[in-house]
Structures are given as structure tokens and as C-alpha cells.
Amino acid sequence: MQLNSRNRTLDLARPVVMGILNVTPDSFSDGGAYVETARALDHALGMVEQGAAIVDVGGESTRPGADPVDEREEMARVLPLIEALRAHSDVFISIDTIKPRVMREACAAGADMINDVMALRAPGALEAACDTQAAVCLMHMQGQPRTMQKAPVYDDVVADVRSFLGARVAACRDAGIDDSRICLDPGFGFGKTLEHNLALMRNLHAFVGDGYPVLVGVSRKSMFVKLHGHDDMSSRIHASVTSAFWAATQGAGIIRSHDVAHTVEALTLAAALADN
Ligand SMILES: Cn1cnc2c(O)nc(N)nc21
Image 1: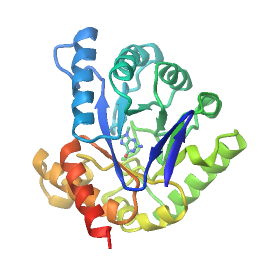
Image 2: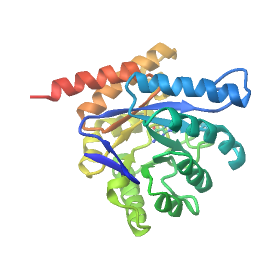
Image 3: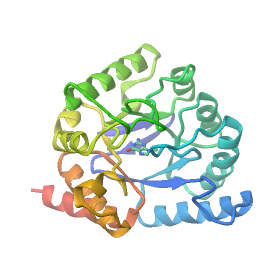
Image 4: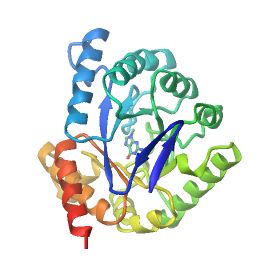
């Protein structure tokens, strides 16, 4: 299994880690664009050192209740970092954005992949993904970040999410995006209750069976608060790393994580146990 982008290929014969790099004012204290970029670059290179095969750069928070960020501000946050990271590393760089202009500018600055939580539904997004020739992650979300967790409902969450992703793949094909550039993501926590998230985790093999690399992102998410009955960061991290191990055993190709070193260790164990 592999993921193509322009003239590069990401080998997914074994699951890889996508390190999370949120460049939002709250992500690196004391502000100041240069300080933020320098600190963010250090963090990115640290994740590469720990074994991340992809660095996912995001300038607009997608967490539940998050406020939108305008295009200019988002580009001001992410473009300097993408340029700096490209100059210092050949790691696969992903841009976490829903905006076509940000997709285009990020790819021009050196990004290899578009990670779109809206699965290229914004006007112009399919064209941007086609023109940039970047790899693409199509993720399922019910509703919008501001309201998606209010009361999510599905007939059959697994079937509904798979059907949505199938329709987005068809839209990509119609837009001239080659299958080899596409990976799919059930979108844990994006308009899902704990029960919905667990059903999707339980049925990851079905998504893997659809024939595209599967990206799983549960890192530090609030779904674990209800599962554990309490909320502390170490519990969330333990559950995230354990989930990464589970997802790898089910055939997931990319694990999106804040905690790269621990997740790499979990995937190393999963690979060792899979080798027969
Ligand atoms: C940006 N972002 C936050 N959570 C995510 C997830 O689960 N998947 C993807 N592809 N992106 C995410």
C-alpha cells in the first residue's frame, strides 16, 4: 500500500505516524510570528526525529466549538512554517485545511498532502486538489465543528460513513484525482458519540477493505473522557496510544498523533506481532 503525491510516494507497507502540528495562537505561548515559526519548526523536526513520516500542519482549530479563522490569517500562520520545514527536512508535509486557496499556497510552499476534514466539499477544493497533484485525505464529518457534537445521529454509523467516503472518492475521480493519491478517514469525534466512535473503531477492517489507505485520528480526543469516566491528559494519551496499536492491528495505514514517540513504539510492536 502507498500514497502518491506529485513526484513523491509515501510507503505504507507498514503503518506510519502523522505528527500533529497546530500553529494556532494557543498552541505556542507568547505569540509573535517568528517565535511561533521557530518553535513550531523545532517541534516538527523533533517529531521527525521521533519517527513521524508525515507532519500535519494546521492553522485553524477543528475541535468541537472552534471558531473559524479567515484565509489570510490561516496562511500567515502555516506558510512560513511549511517553507521552513521543507527547507530542513524531506518529511511528507500535510496541510490541514478546508480552504482551497490555503491548499494551493501550502502546496506551492512545499506541502505534499491535503488533509481536509470537509473531504474537499468547499467550492474549488476538488480543483485545488487536482491542480496541486497532492495526496489527499478525505475525512467524514457530520455537521460543522461549532455544532457537530450537539446531537449526532446515524441510521448505521459504519454504513453511513463508508457511503459518504465512497461518494467523495467518486467526486475525486470525476475531478481527475487518481486513486493512488487518496486516503480515507472515518473522522473520529467529528459528529460522533462515544458509541459511534467505538463502532467505527470496531469496524476499521471494513474501511481497510474498501481498498484505500485508512487514516485514524483519535489522539487525545474527548471520546476517552466518557469511556474512562474521568479526564486527565495522561489517561487520554494512554488511550490514544492503545488505540493506535488496535488500529494498526486492523490494517490502518496512518495514525495521526500528538505523541509520536509512544505511537511509533505501539506501531513497532503491532508490526512485530504481525510478522509471521
Ligand atoms: C485536523 N484533524 C483533527 N482530527 C483529525 C482526524 O481524526 N483526522 C484527520 N484527517 N484530521 C484531523
